[in-house]
Image (spheres, rainbow, N blue to C red):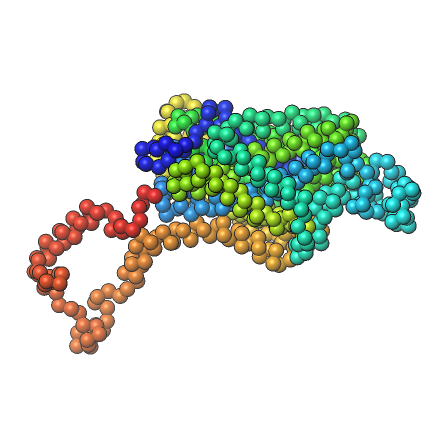
Length: 628
């Protein structure tokens, strides 16, 4: 790691083999978003109706941008910040994607902390969300031991009977033990964002443990990461299959499956469905977050990116599709138990997964064992994405400051400091009202900023750098083969026209149908929306902000002053009216006076000397290295 490369900068790490790279990409793309975020978006947008725009977005947005970023990173072997030596004025794009990813990993790790919490909570002879006879349960709670049609469904010998006798709720008003466990025991959720409450010490410790694991894995950088993904990327598929088999044996599972695969076509007229699908493709594939560029930068120059750009997006989206069967089979069971429809069985939102999956686990034989394995899987899914994402942010900064790489101790201390900082930033999300903040950042940062980052990347690489120049760069790596020629028939029109138009369309429709954020029946206050829009503005405006600042630094201010100043002949038209203020200085066309010694040179010689100096020096601004 301390060796030097040709340009004098410290040597970067590399993958042990291509299997490690592909598995890391799958781990980066296939994460909690597939079994946490995708199901609740699908549930919110009419089940199967969401699959139509989801797979269309994969084709017109996901695959073209995925292939673009892989080639961009591999060609230059640089991280998402340093790589913008290609176009220094557009370096703000790199800053934007790294900032977006930094925001995502802060709240994403809180989700990992929930998984760790459930993992430890499952280490008991009886899962704590199996019944309603716990201190956190309310009179609305109904479990499998109760007769939901009875006026008094609970055991009269329990504390619940003392608290709830005389109360009655209809079937569609009742809640499940898993729902109350998550909301009232894990989150202890307050009434809103304006009531943060005290810190949840148990969730905070789980969050700290998660960051400690990430730090340990990343202490050796990409070399360690490549080994860990062998387990982290494969094991989840085994557990998902087991859960699917169990879900398909539950009574009423077919109602959930029908809701999932039979689209409600009227939903396709809503722009929010299409925008959610596009954003989820960005979110799940890791597009415009810098991770793909960073991971590809550790590749061999001749790695077949075309193969990887076909395999990983398909594996990722099919994983989401596969996980959907698991969760909707259980939703069908829950709807059957409540005698209601699948669409009304639980409130949508990020917490849906922590309600439905535990419900399925509690119905399995030897349920604590399966719960331990499941939440171990969920933690590994989260870690597989967090390892890559955190390494992306940290390695980007180290690329900007190569001195950090000069000794192993510096790198270890830097990574430790980064993980501690991310943990501290996540503390507001581990308060009793922190889930509202998590949902806020998830919706705002995971929306417009990702879409705009896609637009900025296409403008910088395809339009400013040049699509055919970029095509030749790819051919340098992959060669000019029949497969690459066929691929460019699709990718070039997509990069030049289809993808940017699709992105602009999604942005416009998303803006037109914007509604203030809600969670369950809670409406966010105005200051909550303001926090969200500030986060959006910071991620987007950094691009034009850097461009303007770089332009001014390169002498743009003097150019603007010059072109906006009056010409020498400006003033009254008649010479006698000009006075001293607008007097035109006389110039000796044969000699000019320069320097303190009043040396005189012919003006033609002066012009030749000046032109020669400009050609020799190239850039008159010596205060900035344009290559950087």
